[in-house]
Image (cartoon, rainbow over all chains, first blue to last red; front, side):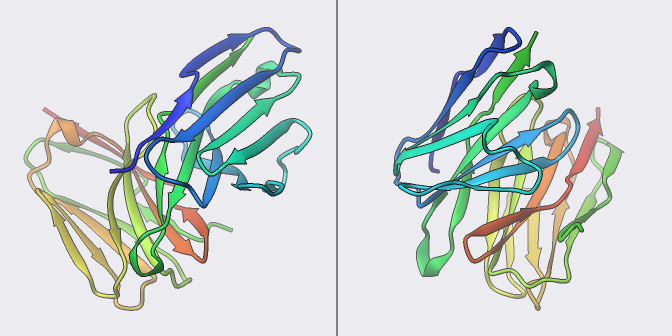
Length: 118
Length: 109
């Protein structure tokens, strides 16, 4: 199966600092990457959709100035949580879409990044 | 509005029992995927179903896509503690994916 990596796996930071999370598709070029947030014992909440070379599309209620997304290449997308606060603490997961046969795209997920803001 | 519903949301069973998880929508999807997620990890793809009425088997797991491509089911035979996790279905429409709320399965030894 396709491999998607995230870095770092976990990060602890002080309130007010910025944190960058990287998402890479290791063995395929991703047409689209997605960023999700997940609270304990809940399902995934889509934050934004990212296409290479264009601005990310944010879901309603997600602050684009707070969560900066850069999609520099077909294999790399980054999420920067700016001026992080304790309420930003969460599990952030990225996924990359791999084009499949007959137009069937499949999402492959990264292992997630646990962010704790003190 | 939840485009994809999953039922049950929670399920706790004994090892060896069978179970079925349902994923339902009023929308048609071009494909549907099932994932399993364990705590602290990202979801892992189990299967993608594309054709209405399609049935796929993965060892003790049987996946079915509804004829109208609006719903799907996951049946686990003789569940084992290793099957414990959060099961997510996701429907694909164009280049968007819609996730269900998940079914949290606990298989007790």
